[in-house]
Image (cartoon, rainbow, N blue to C red):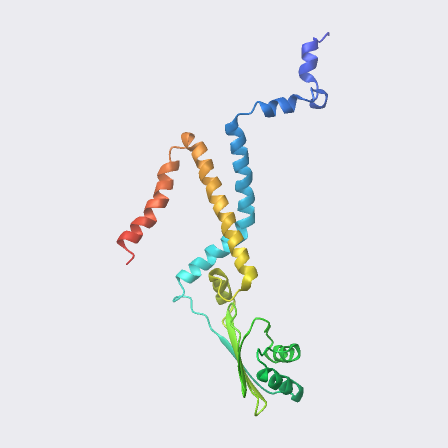
Length: 230
C-alpha cells in the first residue's frame, strides 16, 4: 500500500522535524504567556526558598499567641569554681587597662566551666569584680568573678526548645547572621505574595471567587482591629 508524502511528514519523529520549529513557536507566544511563565518561575523559586521559614514562623506564631497556655519549665544550673592563678592574673591586668577585654585564655576557661559560647557575652569590669552576662535564644547565663577571693559564681538557664524557637521568631539575641536571614526570608515572602497576587489577577476571569476571597483576606483583619482590638 502506497503512502502519501504528507502522511510520512505527519509520522516523522520530532528529531527529524525543522530545527527552527521550537524557536518559531517560542516567538509566537503572546506577551501574556511569557509574563505568566516568568511569574510562575519566580513564584515557585520564592516558595521553595521560604518554605521552611514559613512553617517555622507559622508554628511559632501559634505558640507565641498562646504563650500563657503553653508554659515551659526552665532548667537552671549553678556553677561555683575557684579561678586558677594564671587566669586571675590576666583578669587583674585587663581590669587595670584602659579598654579591658577578656583574654582568650580566660574566655576558654570560662566556656569550659559554663559549657557555653561566650564570644558575644557582655562584660562589666570593676577593680575587684568581673560580671559577665550572656543572653541567648531560649536561655541566658550570668557569671561573676571576685578577683579578691578568686571565686567564680554563675548560673546558666535553659528554657527549652520551644522558648528557643520563639526567640528565633522574635530575633532575640540571635546575632547578625540570623538578622540577615530574616531580611532575606522576608524578601522571599514578598516575592512569593506579589507573584501569587499577579497570577491571581491573570486567572481571575476564569475564577469568579478570586477577588471576593482576596477582599475577605483584607477586610477581616481590618474589621477585627477596628471593632475588637483596643
